Amino acid sequence: VLLIALLIILGSFSFVYNTPVVVPVVDPIAQDARTRFGLISACVVPVSPLQASMYNLEVVQTSLLNKLDYCSRHNDTSCHLTTESSDKCNSFVWEKEFSLLRYLRAHEWLIWVDCDALMANLTQSLETIARHAQPSEDIVLYRDHNFYNLGVVMIRSSEWSEWFLRELLDMRDWMEHMWGGWRDQKA
Image 1 (cartoon, rainbow, N blue to C red):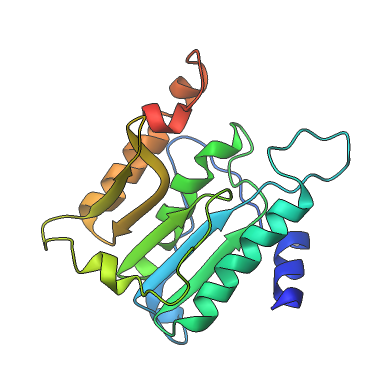
Image 2 (cartoon, rainbow, N blue to C red):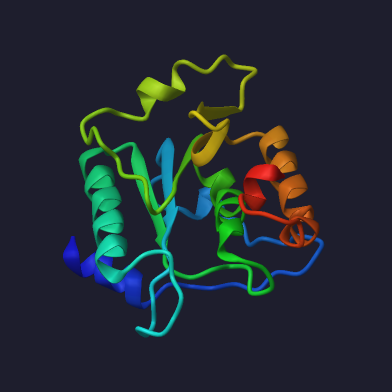
């Protein structure tokens, strides 16, 4: 598991996108064994001590190892982890939307978990969350004391979900120039 985490940290893939949003989608037919759930996370790794990063290497390693540990315990869940941004034009906060869109067709459900969030109950299946969603509900959001928090979000593979993610990404250039933080949360 440690070797896999180091390979992820040291050798992530990156893609460059332009508007309109064109995201290479993972073809579910091309996968050897399609899993029902995909767990996605991204952490910025500081390349040097001078580089500004929200997290140090220890936090990144702990986060990615936690998610790998979770996926290794659940045969119905695949991990998609990265340490690099897909969008070279804007900030890293948009990696969530790019990654969700990229893997949307590869799984029935995706869950995004921010780098600073951990899977606390490693034995609880994502099925326990998915079964609470009605057939017409494609997104599960969590509300904290501020409002809806997109740090952990679960999204069903559907035409609506694809439309929704593309709409968010189409707003990113405008949202990047808004005053204040929480850019992707405002979208």
